[in-house]
Amino acid sequence: MAIQRMDNVGIVVEDMDAAIAFFVELGMELEGRAEVEGLFADQCTGLDGVHCDIAMVRTPDGHSRLELAKYRSPAAISAGPRNRPHNILGTHRVMFAVDDIEDTVARLRPHGAELVGEIARFEDSYLLCYLRGPEGIIVGLAEQLR
Image (cartoon, rainbow, N blue to C red; front, top):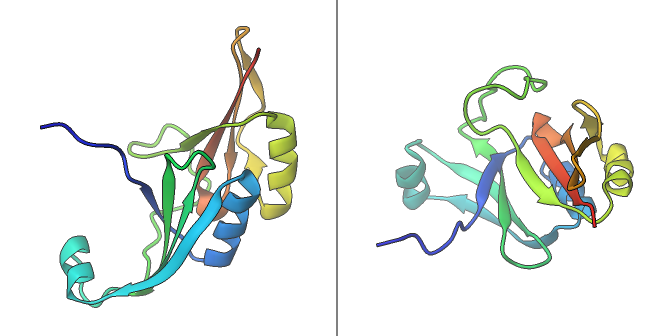
C-alpha cells in the first residue's frame, strides 16, 4: 500500500491574521477557517484540552496546502529563538516555486519577511533564496530561469 498524496504541512502560529496575510500575499488562497476542539483533537495530538483555531491555505494549483494553527489551549510552547539557523535538525523550511523572486520578496517585506542570506543563482537553472516569515518560519523561494 502506498500513500495517496501529501495532504498538508502544519504550522503553529501566534498571530493567525498575520500568518494568513503573509501566505495570501505570497499567492496562496485561503481555503477556510475553523475552530478545533474535543476528544478527537486530544486523541490525535496527544494533548489534553485542545482548543485551537485553524486556517487552511492552498497553492493556486490546488495541490499543496498549509494548515495554520493558533492554540488557545494548551498554550503554544516556544521551541527557542525564532531566528534559528537553517541547519537545525528537523523541518526547517517550506519551498515555493515563484514567477519573479525579486517581486515576491518585495511584496513579502511589508509582512515582516527578511532574507536569511541573499538571492543566489544556481547555475543557469534557478534563482533561490530563503526568507524568514511569520513565527520565524523559513520560506524558500525558487524562480526557474528559462
